[in-house]
Amino acid sequence: MPRPAAPVDATQLSLFDATTPAATPPAASTPTRGTPPPAAPHEAPAATPPALAPAVFRHPQADREIHLRQHVVGYALRRARRRSIGFIVGADGLAVSAPRWVGIVDIEAALREKADWILRKLGEQQQRAQRQLAAKVVWRDGANFPFLGETVIVVLDARATGAILNSDAQALPGVPRLTLHVGLPQTASPEQIRDAVQSWLQRQARRIFEERVAHFAARLSVRCTRLALSSAQTRWGSASADGSIRLNWRLIHFALTTIDYVVTHELAHLREMNHSPRFWDVVRSVLPDYERARGTLKDDVLPVFE
Image (cartoon, rainbow, N blue to C red; front, side, top):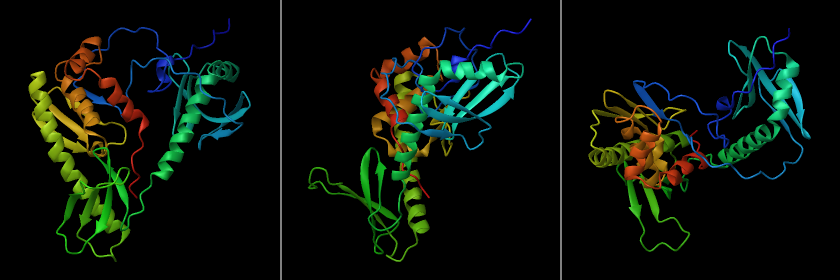
């Protein structure tokens, strides 16, 4: 008797998936919990996206191709020891993981069943890639970057020592009021300018994160034993059962409300090493509107440092 078609594993779809997966038993506590960049486990269902113009979406490791609606989707298929078909739409495109015993006909039937979700996610990734391209910083005199949610203009000033942030309280509406005077000559290379700005940002990150951790640790009655900066590509922060916290230094680009959400999220793990309703109640106890800040982590695009 042929095996039944493998069910689609909805929990594999995406961290941003708007559908609510079937209820599962609470996960066991683990010694380390983290904040993935866009983690949003309780989003409301998304509105139906506008129709996309016919397009070709192709994963760089694509070994299969399928037509979904009027679009061509090249996807990377991986066989794995699992019980269901999983879809992941990332920056590279669509990747499918399926049990070895499931045939291509069943896999593509599952893809067609989830066509709307797949095309919506591919469109979002395409738009995000375009925004990231626009966010690439050209490191020169007059370059700009976000700091605590505001735009900062780089001013090369050989007379300055290190880097000094100046504020123009009289700046016109819509004109950046912050300038960072970097102690480099006009002949400085893009790499020198980038490294000077990044070093300054990391110093500010440590100072501000220490202040916010101390503030919210007191409010939550927890103790942070160690704070470290990270450059992780997949997490904004993490917490360990021993009380140590790691925060991504690039959070410094966001407004303070967003930084406070990640800080609170990680500190709350020192009381609840899970993402249960009790955990979110701890977060909500000090940040009643944390959902808004969490949305910023999902939607905003950081400057590209190259």
